[in-house]
Length: 356
Image (cartoon, rainbow, N blue to C red; front, side, top):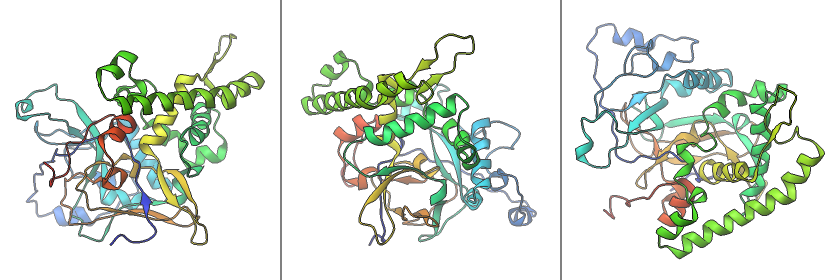
C-alpha cells in the first residue's frame, strides 16, 4: 500500500512517542480572516499557534508541547522559505515535547523536552505533511553498508561550516542554517548512543551482540580515519579543520572522535532514497525537516520521493492529523529492534500498541 518510490527511513536521534500538545481554540470572529492572510515572513504559518511570537518559545501547560521560536529555529524557517519550502510552515513547525517517563512527572518544572515536528492545523489523510525539494537535501552519495563513507563527506562540509569556509553555492543553499540545528558534537543528543558508551557502560548492558556491533563500528571509524582523514590533514589542514586558530598557532584538526560523531549523524538521520526511475541504486540524503521527525512504531505516515533533480521528498499523512499532534514516522520501517535503536538513536522502544 506504500506509494512507489519509497524512502527507507533511518532518521534522527531525538525521540518521543506519547507527548500530545493540547490546543486552545479561539472563538474570535476575526480568526477566519487571520487564517487566510499571507505573509512573506518565515514565521507566518506559526502565528496564532501557542503563544505570541514575541517569546522565544510558546508557553503552555506542563503536559503540552511548545513551538520552537528560538533564534536558530526562526533562521531555519527562513531557510525553508528561501529555498521554496515555505508551504510547509502552513502545516508544520518545530516543537518541543515534554518527555514524561511516568505519571509522577506531571507538574514538575524540570521534565526534559525533545525537539520534533508538530502539526499547525488539521491535515486530512493522504495530504502532504512535509514536502522538501531534492535540491535542499544534502546528498552524501550512494547507499552502502558502511556509514563511515558518507560520514567523511559530512564531516568535511561541517568543518568548513565551523570555520566559515563554505562555498558560495553551499552558503546560498542554506547549509549555515541547517547545520546550526543539527545535534552538536559531544552533546547530550548523541551520548545516548552506545557509540559513545564507556567500556564499563557497554559491559553493564550485559548484551554481547550490541557490544560486538558497537566495537565493530568503532574499529571501522578508526580504520576510515587513519586511511582517509589523517593523511589529508597532513597535506592540508583546510579539509578537516575543526577550529580556526586566529592567534597564529596550529589549527585544531578533526579527530577520530569527530568522525565517530559524524558517523552517528549518518546512522541516526540519513534516509536512503531511490535515485531516478532509470537507476537501480539509492542515495543517502540528509533531508531538512523530515530528519527532525521523531519515532512512533505505529505511525502510518508514508515517506516517498526520489533522489533526482526536480523531485519532491514527502511525508504523506497516513491518517487524519489534528492540529497540535506530533508528526512522527516509524524508524527502520517499523521493523527494527532495540539493538539498532540503542546504537543508532540512543533510545529503547517499548513496542507498538499491539505489543504493549
